[in-house]
Image 1 (cartoon, rainbow, N blue to C red):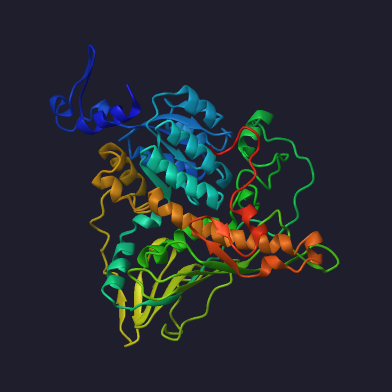
Image 2 (image 1 turned 180 degrees about the vertical axis):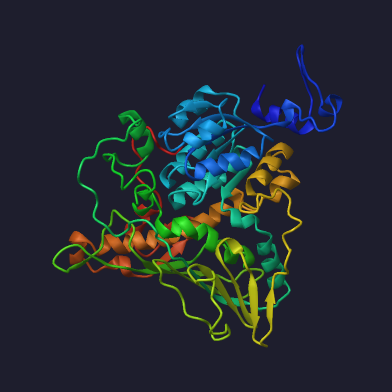
Length: 485
């Protein structure tokens, strides 16, 4: 029986297969959930964020958790305890090859393994929920977007703020013309809150207890092999380009999402950046091309769209650098979060629209002096609450049961059809940052610093058209046995 047939059965509630018959739910009595109504879900990455992802997909017992995969069982201990019947794996390739009863999988590994793990699952007909950013690079985001369509996969990226109903209110406000057409968007974050701009570790450290050389090889995945170091695992990998995507990758899919969604943006046309320096020795300013910088500023431009008649300039900053108050926002009001650490400002002809991380606390300041806020209790009618996750996982589960192309599937707030292009925009900033760092580091000091120039982007063909050296950062070099195919 093919997996797609099984999913059709999950939707219908009954199946006759030879002499085997599963009794429909209504025969078993009110409140009883037939086994056929439950998805078999696995986790690739079961510690850290992976523990909350698989638990939210589980939805208090609404689904079956049949397998957990993590190279570090100490990190995954809480998930293993919570789901004692789940089979345990250390290599997701083995799990996907051996266990044929998996309908769907959450993927919450470090960024560099998202693409390979998700593509392998989709090729086996397994529906995927992938943590943000969707992928490590632009090429992988495009391949996953196309792969989900090809294999008829119900997909969702883990930027849970996409399902925050306040974002729908922001769309309503904008379409009602309250702030007019937007030409400038400012977005900022206090990340990184992990080490960045530090030397590449050189000392050889022993593997942690419970992690073998084979497990570490699996963790490295498609990246170039390096020895274990606590600056890589379990969390600080975010600051190294081989494994992470820096502050943009961590928060960009949350913070860029509201403007991308409200203004219906597509591929950008250009990008440029400025990057914070570090001082390693002799007080000489330096860039470390292997690692993400301590701070950066990125500017991306988008053409006008059907809903927004002006070209949009989007300015991103991280490392604690934030924009200044627009004149229209009172001096004693925070911008973004209550401490102004993260936020979004969309500046239009008639006023500005603002929100915090995850599209929260949406508000409009009009040129007339009026302030419009989301009504209290606006989200009280939400289904699938988990308020912290806005039903993001359970909506994905319901869409799987309804089927590829169903109304539930089309209404997902971050399927790859949407989150793939969003991720490409986020990672576009990193393409500029990496080009900047490389062209101004080491031997690059003898060059004309071409990586500092504005990069012109052909989105359809995934190509920088005026600086070919930057195109190596569109994708990556894959270690043997780990290519995205």
